[in-house]
Image (cartoon, rainbow, N blue to C red; front, side, top):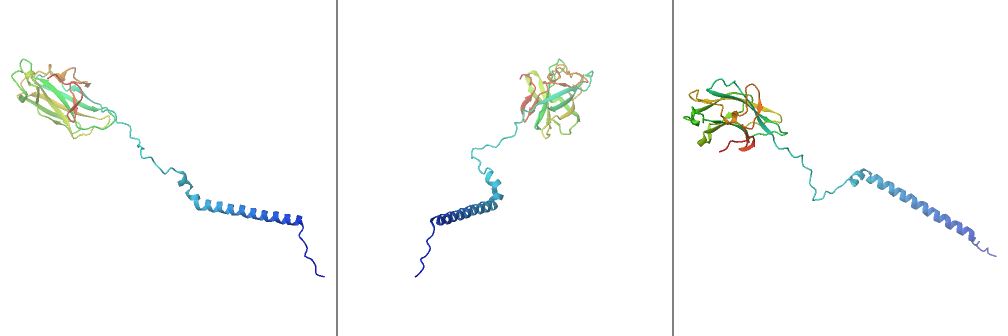
Length: 224
């Protein structure tokens, strides 16, 4: 008589089923770990690049430098002699840059009058301007020019057109104004730019104005 196959016990089938599920879950967990490790290996070196911002809006405006302060220039002058001589005026003119940035294209202007009693027979063509010294070696004296011919007011420019004045620097020019014939009719006491000056002491003065590229930037001009 043939043997009948043994039938599986219900409890045994349940155990086998649970073991199968366990093996499948372990395989899934192991596969996920491998995938995570592989991804980290492949992209780990790029993590910083992925985090860093890669887009700048088109409306972005780069910050600009701090605005440069307005240039401050001034003249400080002393008389080069006690002016006991009546045939000339000697000036020592210092032009300062008190600003924070270099500046160029500067000139200072000395005004004088030929309106005294003994001067009235002279005009600007009778006056000479002589440069006696130049600390920076860059100044040039301009021609004697009429400012208000009706009132016998003239001027001479000290030009530093090719000189750049760095912050806190100055240049000094010593010059002499006199009649070409050295006549003692020359009278400096009523000259516009002489106002307030004295011998032996430098003094800032607005009566010797300063121009930059032809525009007045310091001091006061006489009436025209």
